[in-house]
Image (cartoon, one colour):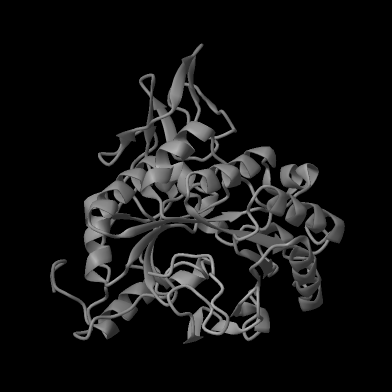
Length: 388
């Protein structure tokens, strides 16, 4: 068997168990002939200091004394010659900034769009999900720390250039591409170019992000992005700094800009015991969302699971999530969800006018959809979202 011979399902599983395949199995579908959907080939990381053949000159940086300054995100990293930025995938090479994440995804999955989570965007469809290593935040609770807190030079990557991503997406029957798992703002050029190509072929684009990005690159990106889910990690600046290594205001600016640019927006707030479960802070957060015209953006309160540097904490009590949801509804948020609690009734989409259950979910699966052309089948209320 050579490297061009398709593997059957048994051979592919065996290869993965032996550590010979870089593609994660979760959510990966199979064709009827037993060939895995994604055919991206693994590549070997380069040596320290080597400029990979997949590197592309980055955008948004300026010369600085003794180096360059990245202006992509609020971190404003200064890069001395040969140095990487905080995100670990932008390098100063000869006085120019290069992205070593370009064409180098370390994760390739096919997911239900509900997993992002997006509940009001093309329900029941599949999204081709990619990620490159690196992140510009340092979240103590990161669920993907194995790829977000390292450089593309430390992960096993696929050789998957933008054109190939779009080709794989089309071949797998997905209606969208999701830039997700790590932080797409750190592989900005890769995602940007892929999204532009996808748009020309009628494929939608999803940005799953912390929202920690400067205004100019965000506005440049918006015309090619159809939907975004932004993690609003807290509404307390002190908590944002200590828990995530970031600041709050740039994220709030991102939310306002996405609304202005008419990108479909959903918001996730992970409720972490002792960190982000303060009900007064949640009240302030939900009031701010409504005051800034974001009351129709679905808000997902998700349950924390102990891991990474917060493994000593307990899971979020369901009652805490329910209390947060009640505060959001009282503030005027129209669509409030509870996540990571499969089977909870607040996984369902309910008409804010008459209370009719319109979409019933179990985890990431839609088991019933009674929406009729984006309106309530009972009272005719328009339900905000992208339904086709």
